[in-house]
Length: 161
Image (cartoon, rainbow, N blue to C red; front, top):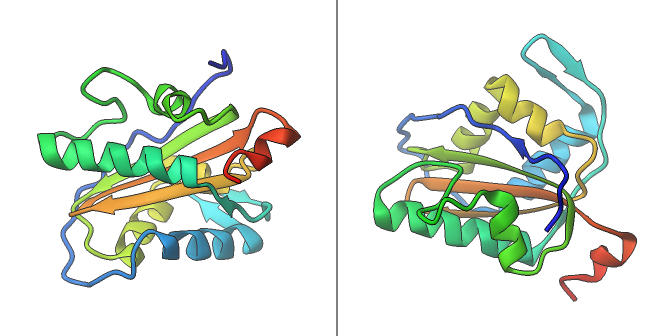
């Protein structure tokens, strides 16, 4: 387990939409498109950031957390065992140097959840955070979780293989 600080985006977003979605894998395309152009997060103009790669381990932690929140009817960065994103990543042996998370509830399309995250400075800053290199995401019902990370070492990039 790492002793480095966790990065959280904790603003609660609740909005209902009638659009459909192509699923969480579309989020990486949308996030990478934003990162390659830079973005105005609140009043801060954030520069271009490297694109992210998909991490199955981060996707597993995202799916488990989205499923737990959906099944147990709660919304939090902490699960019922009071584990945060770092502890949940540790449980699937994701060896991380940086870890962060955006969550949302009430959105029925990737477009709407991305728009809401980008309109929230804290969530937008997490999307643009330059010290992450991987992400995994999941949606269960109208619960969305995207986990962001940077492996603990260059060897960490081989974790999912």
